[in-house]
Image 1: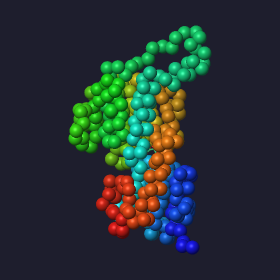
Image 2 (image 1 turned 120 degrees about the horizontal axis):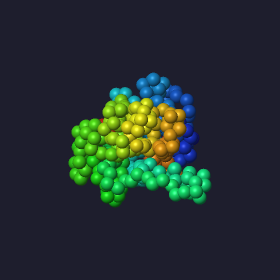
Image 3 (image 1 turned 90 degrees about the vertical axis):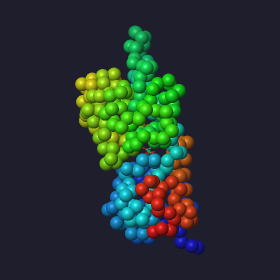
Image 4 (image 1 turned 45 degrees about the vertical axis):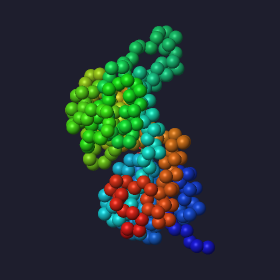
Length: 313
Ligand code: 8YV
């Protein structure tokens, strides 16, 4: 019998990944020489230079999720290690959730549910809420997911504008060269930007102030993009009206100050968390590893590693 190639699996067990890899690979949990592939299934492990040092034969890191701020992709590329992620298969799911969270925050859907369950409706009608009508929505990060959100917002008849590293070609939305300029112009800021040093605390006290007292912040990107302490202050001081958050700076820890607020909507990072979409994402992790070991190169390499084809190590 030929020996199976060892692949290291990091993070929470994901059945589609484990079953998909088991036929072809020996699955291991400890780093050692001889391991050429790693599957990263969430969790909070950083794939950095120190970890890569323990895997001298590493060729490919296949990570679950479109965001890969837990992987030092530049360092991997420098070592000739390809990093793959799972774009596209989650775009619609995350965009649906973003629209849902925006509307839930503005129309106070969780609060309304709590109102019924507590029996308050028997005594009086729930107080009126704010509205999405006539709002201008600013999107921070008009990538694949940002565009899918914008498309959904088009159907809601609201104006969409955006900020990102550069203007996007062929989109009908106004570009703002600065985030502050976008926040000044809009009363909803929807954060879709990915994490990492480049976007760390982009949404700071000044940006929140610019959003104004009717302002709504929604974050489905990464918690690190928002200065969470400044956000708590802005909500407490009514510098902005409300927030809908699917991501946090130090997950799964949510600041008690946010938990104590009844007027914000807090979700446990569920943007892509349907059975259907997580299955597709997990399958793409498996397919990237199979493709790599079959010499077909990576299927969905991250931008930093796109130049590294099969066998270029
Ligand atoms: C992932 C996410 O599913 O894709 C991403 O970047 O944030 C999530 O949707 C999750 O991080 C996987 O662990």
